[in-house]
Length: 315
Image (cartoon, rainbow, N blue to C red; front, top):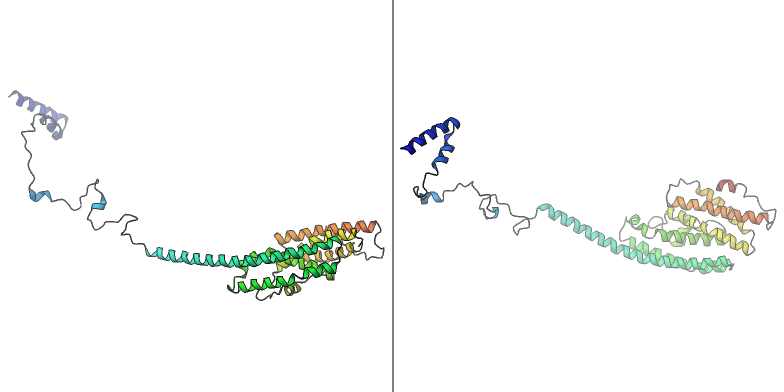
């Protein structure tokens, strides 16, 4: 009786403090309920497998689910590549073939260019003999023997480029510097023989080039002429040492006309422009040699005074 009265008083006081008596009441009744007094009910067999189809435990792996929205993991055996991957693979396969063909073609070009470079070195070695007061006709004739080889090598280049029509400028850089050196040697030989400039068409004829298919580029020709002017100051000094006091005047007049012709061109700030600027210093060196010879009275006073306007142009 006392326990029942105590529970009633306590339950009434709890309702005054907490309007929701469920939590408080269950807390007070739980200690008084015996675990053995409430036997566990067994779930009927018909309700054991009645699991909601939308329920899934967060701790279960999605790989064991039989849901139709199953997405395979990346790299699985059942993954089907998208159609765009086939296009990507085909594109890069074409790139690989193109690059391999281009590399093979460059190897053929490089083999011929090495032959051109070797022939040019031999011509240059022969022309260096003019600085040792060797007879000019003998030196030039020996150097001309290699021109036939150069024609053959440039013919081989033309045959190689016929395999890829329209790709001349793509591979032109592979023989550009060698062609500029060839033009330089040919122009120097021509000047030693005639005292005049080797024109563009004559250079193409010597090399067997055709301006329509495989020709001599204008910039390569001009750069080669600038290279040729670099050899003239040394030639003048050696000729004066050998007693040829009229050589400075001839070279000075030639370089003056050549320098004036180059000034007609609107050259950008590139490699050709830098080589043209070096021609100005070549002309100045030749002028200094001429002035020294003139002041010392080693040339006759009847020489044409064509040098008066040269200093103003070179400056």
